[in-house]
Image 1 (cartoon, rainbow, N blue to C red):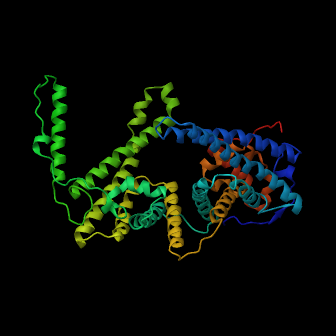
Image 2: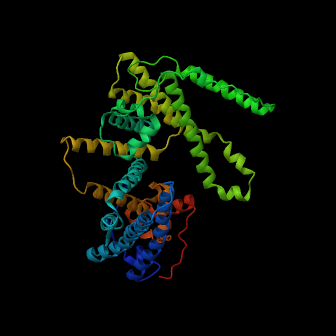
Length: 461
């Protein structure tokens, strides 16, 4: 039988549930706020410094000033969210006289995030909303499966990704205003020649360069065999590429050179980039192990799973371009509607790197683009504060799950809450919440074991 809620309210006090380590609500709130302030400052200092370094230039005084102000503003947002969460927990209990299924976490979290998100920069609110909505969607699905309301669909993330990416690619080929960052990512993956009004792109010449420029004589031949072998290999490579470029290209295709070159060059380029990114992530995350045991670097590098990301994005690019060119040849013209079947077919490559986070992010981004397009054309109303309300609602779902049913929360988000609260999210007593009939304390014990976190922490206040 799926677990069912047996009670709506419980008679526990703040000391019984919220802060069993101290009798003072003020002391507990201050302790959580101070720790969250330190952790938030550490997180956002790292985030903003990495963003500053990724610009690839020496930062100016204005860059440094904006970075410092951004760190302080984002730190205030996140730390106030944690601080006010504790305030609303105890305050709502004092007002109502008890805790119920909504006031143990959901409602305090909604109010605290509503008070905090207005502090954060407006330009970051949409990004934060997409992030928490992504995880909240997965959490709600897990909760439904846990309750037996529905079952897991095999390869469900692939279907979500296919439908969502096809919609985004259609808008990529249709929308004139492409200011959203997701369109820059799509242009990087499938190329600039598939975007809206790609005829504005300055095309490269379709004819090959004169042979006098293609082949250069080497007057001084080296006796070095390695040099000669490399030079011969390079000459063969150039010859193959030149022959490939010279193949037939349909008149409706907007890209330079042949369709074969367009498909192969795009796929291999993204394949290489995917492998490079995957290796970089693995090496960065395991640098401590490599520093202690340099010999394991070879084992980390030469693993089959390091190919999966490259196979996904390289395969996606190659299949999408191949289908797009094939449809242009078949119908004798170009059309933005080709993005839909080409995007769905290319999503087969996602089976090489299936990831819930990617699939749900693409889904929410596609819904955002669809809504914005509807608002721009007057077909849908513009709802003010929608992003803020959705952010608060999604975050409230995550905090509710962390308290009532932590087994349905993504492990990485549980660890984030554990670090942000200094372990207080785990130390909050769950025994009183077992009265709801959802087995909360047993679920917490399982999550602590799985994530290697602990609830055995003592606090001075």
